[in-house]
Image (cartoon, rainbow, N blue to C red):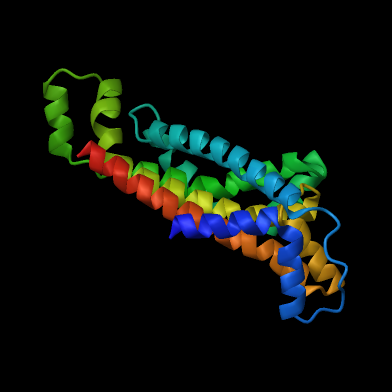
Length: 236
């Protein structure tokens, strides 16, 4: 399924003008000008923002999640979870709007908003996954003389991997969709087509931006789900 959707998405991006022409035949629109910029340009911008923000969110979220489950960071757990929950509760457009006065228009503000929005599922799943590791297994590891670091590397993280990967998968899918809003602050991406379509009442432009985003989110979800199964299988 993922392979088929990847082929369809590739054809849409590569032959964007043909895809646009088909949409104009199928959908009634007040404008027939279409996009002046190739879909591939917006697609690359979208992928770049998703990859960069996701890399930062996964790295930061995993490290923070692990830290608050340690003896040194346990007292900060509730504060951290409440803080990221507040960030998740904020609508994406509001986060972007708050970032603009500080960092101005462009990719910097968009990246910060995307990272904040993706942190919650990652941190939450890291904390839950590690805390659900059975206590008798941890006690057995301590009895073997393992240090706290060794217990995390050899016991806790491997046993919590399934839950952790689930949080990362959720964060990436959220990021792919939320990145569409980055166009509102001049960061580019497929959201530019959606925004321009709304402004000009052009349903074709809206679909030209929305369809690739939807396909990309589904493809990433399917691929990461399959990767998660393979990693968990190899661990067992």
